[in-house]
Image 1: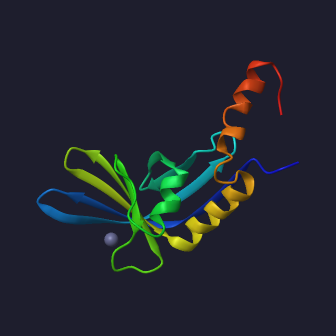
Image 2 (image 1 turned 90 degrees about the horizontal axis):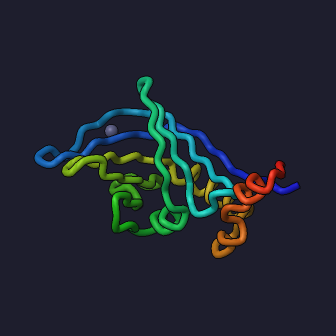
Length: 142
Ligand SMILES: [Zn+2]
C-alpha cells in the first residue's frame, strides 16, 4: 500500500497589495497544503482566516521553481519572500489591481513538496493522472 496524498498545516501570513497603496497587512492565517496522487500536477492550498475560507490550486512545478527564484507568468506567482529569509510568497491576482500575498514557512512547504515527490516523482505525473477517476468510472473502488 502506497501513500496517495501528503498534507501539512501551518500558520501563514497574509498581505493585500493594491494599486496606490503598497500593502495592507491582514495578519496571520491558517494554511493547509495538500497533494493528491490522483491530481498530480497540483498542490491545493486552503486558507482559513477570520471565518473565511479560500481554496487555491497551484502547480507543483511552480512551487518548486518559486522556492529559489521568482516563478509564474499568469495569475499566480511564487518567489522567495523579499527581506524574509526562510519564507516563500505565493502571490495571486484576485482583481484587476489587487493581489493577495500569502507568506509561507519555507521549511513546511519543502516538507510537503518532498513528500509529494516520494509519492509521485517529478516527470511521472502522467502515470498517475486521472486513474482514480478511470477506476471509479469502471465501477471499482479503492
Ligand atoms: Zn503583515
